[in-house]
Picture 1 (tube, rainbow, N blue to C red):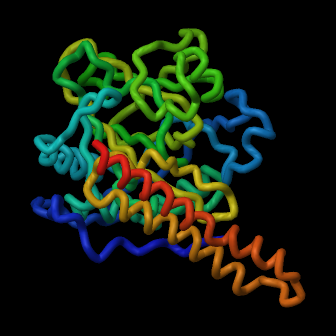
Picture 2 (picture 1 turned 90 degrees about the vertical axis):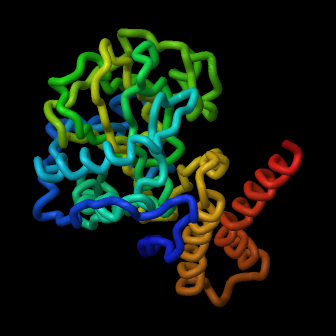
Amino acid sequence: MLADPLPFPRQIPTEYAYELDEPRFDPRVHLALEAPARVLSLADIGYTAAETKDCASQLAITAPFRLLSDAGVAAVRHIAKELREKRRTSRRTAAYLTGGVYRSRFLRDLCNSPDIAGHLSTIAGCELLPHTMPSQQIYINYAPEDISKSVDTWHTDGIGFDYVVLVSDPATFVGGEFQFFHGTKREAAAFLGARPEDLTEANSNDLPADRVISTRFPAAGFAMLQQGGLVVHRATRLEQRAERITLVPGYVARDVAFPDPTRDVVAAWNEPGIEAEYARHKAWLARTKLDHLIASIDLGQKPDAIVRVLRSAIADVEHAVSVINALSAHEETS
């Protein structure tokens, strides 16, 4: 049940504006796509077939692979530094920027590049599209001023797929390693004293050292693709103040027959326009399922069977209504 890509919104939230002096994205200039030397599957890190049967891909995480050319690194690093003054903080992530595709045309075109999506699809073993919620198409993470803080604490992502690409020279900082847990999120949650569904939030506890895999990027422009909603990961603290900038672009599986891994909590992340983005995302899922129903429904089906397939097709929209209503009620009582 393959969905068509969702066009970028014609309107951007009023809080954002395209205001940078930046180059035009050119995949021939700014990309240097290479294959990873190693790909770990979900089974490799401990998930069972029963736990992953509803996953669009069996990918867990890759080794670092080249994604950006030197020119691409220079362009992205320049943009990230220009936007740094707009960064935010949270209990989980020390310093990060939201709305990158609304603030930079270069980042918008990078995140919506068919060349990148095609390359990542080959690695993942399923067709991937840029995430249908523009807020989830990219985050930029910066090193904190307070080096006693981790760049990012142990967590899972609120979406299914993303890649982490380093745009700072790793030779210029000590610490700040990307780490992931060799195990399932249920196991990690038990160690961290949390529920698996709460791993999108900050957690100051630690995981057993013998279950933690540390990765250092060979150079700026290298990336790691992961199924971030299932791989528990973090970035450690720096040992001294330095520049450490990563981009985290998000993706969705094109086959919407699989359950949507985008977490409802994303709709409550207090970013401009995010509730409407969430509504568009769920409507995109439902539209694809309704189109499939129109094309394939058996005209001999009984009424009760027709009702079941109709309800299944619109379930995403009905769920979105309940989530947004709950958010509205919470705002009214806060």
